[in-house]
Image (tube, rainbow, N blue to C red; front, side, top):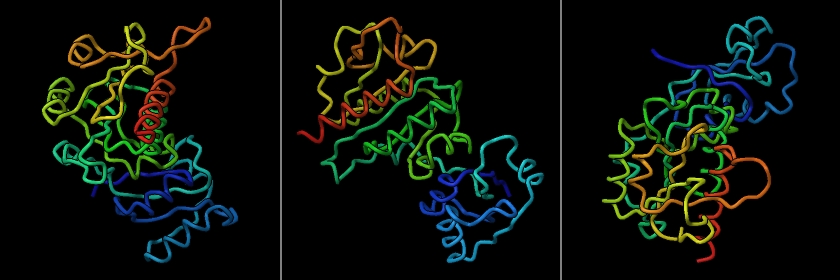
Length: 247
């Protein structure tokens, strides 16, 4: 039986709340007051999930040096979503898609932050390549403050082919690129769209960019060359959300 260890208050609570993983056991730091852990304890008790208080040495052996906030859980692996399910029309939004495609985001902190923002603005699904990209690990769940546990995430073999499938499903593909000719704020993000965000070092790969319908830049000033991936993605997703709410 394959399992993994989630750690931190938000990831453990959201895993329990989302109900997408099987939770086998909750671990609490020995001697730590319940306090902020009370919602986790209550949920676990209501579902007859075993709980165990363990010492600091055992906690370190369980999660390593990670900041665990005195709680962890042994859970089933993260449940990936099939691409075919993500590409099903969204009736609640008149069939309009709002997807996030990530091209080689390798930093788990950036991936977690992007997933957290995507959940906040109602993105229908996050798609990332299987190779040269961070994976949905417990560290990503921690960086997302547990948002990963509610997110539909798909890993694909070929991002370019996935972009073509998105186009076949009526989406406009919007790539973020700092040397693009059109500002993000002049782009129309109100329709059925997929936003493509490139990796931390080199941005969108040339072939991925070539298959985008539009390339957009985020205006900025000052001596810093560009925003990091998580910040750029947040700006783009919230601009799309703003336009879609306004319309």
